Amino acid sequence: MQTVDIMRIFVPATISFLFGIGLTPFLTYFLYKHHFWKQKGGKTALDGTPAETFNRLHTAKEVGTPRAGGILVWGSVLLTAGLLGLLASLAPDAFGSLAFISREQTWLPLAALAAGAIVGFIDDFYEVRGKGGLHLRIRLLVVATVALFCAWWFYTKLGVSAISVPFVAGPFELGVWFIPFFILVALALYAGGVIDGIDGLSGGVYGSIFGAYAGIAFFQNQLNIAALCAAILGGLLAFLWFNIPPARFYLSETGTMALTLALTVIVFLTDLRGAGHGLMVLPIIALPLVVTVLSIFLQLASKKIFKRKLFMVAPLHHHFEAMGWPAYKVTMRYWIVGIVCAIVGMSIALL
Image (cartoon, rainbow, N blue to C red; front, side, top):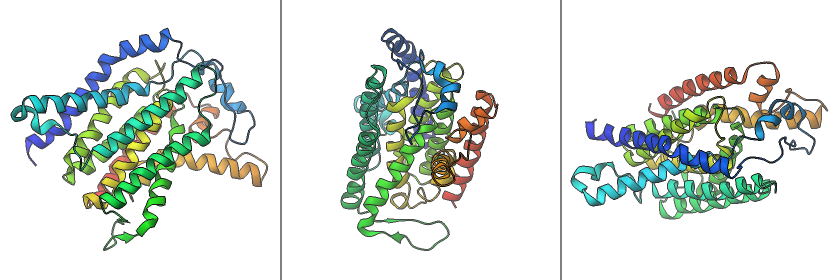
């Protein structure tokens, strides 16, 4: 392990963090000037009934706190990638090793990040203008379409049609079924974006996830992917600096859609493509997202089958709030669980 390799990770993370801190006053001014928040608080549950418990806990906070804080994260990442690429072209001897935009490793996750950012921002824009945002079916279709393109790229351009399984010799071949499987993973990760519901929660959880995949990619010698994950982590830390209670803005759709689509690609790039197990450790590293999604499905199933709620409110982090836990306690305990899961998952991936 050379010092230059370590610097390829820490420099993008640091620059992205500094970009995020520096951009925040401008983003804050823009969002507050244009009243970039929901005009009316409250949500409706997936079954069409009013989300009474959630509305009691969060309606007041949803009005007056801007959405689209995810601009800070992906904006910092894209600026960092562009700056290091420019410096590398101007002074290759000094900065050539720091540029992490590459066809083999980071073009696809950066494209997924940008696509999710654009569509997510459109959803946020419609939301704050009182038009209810993009319909869930449209957002799911967008995620599936982007995932379809990425899966096709893996299957036809990169020749990937299998996944690796820890402690099992040889890859598990999926053939053409790799494509729908890829899409399913993308949709599942996107569903986990509902964790963006308490001040500071999503930033900390996503930070531990991308930190883990930065470590996995680094030890698999996928240094450009590791640098990209580190840059995303830097942007998330800058966002988190201003998202701790009381939040200055929310990550919202432009952040969660961008991050989950990029994460999907990174997960598969650190799997067989990187001679590792990036996919099979995803449920461990992203356990807070997994639990969040499962709690919603269990709640819906319980209401449909047993005609009663399993949780006071879903997803699970709001259930803890409804039990009387202060929001900061829920957030910090999720951070702890997320960090432990990231360490465990990364350790298994590197066995």
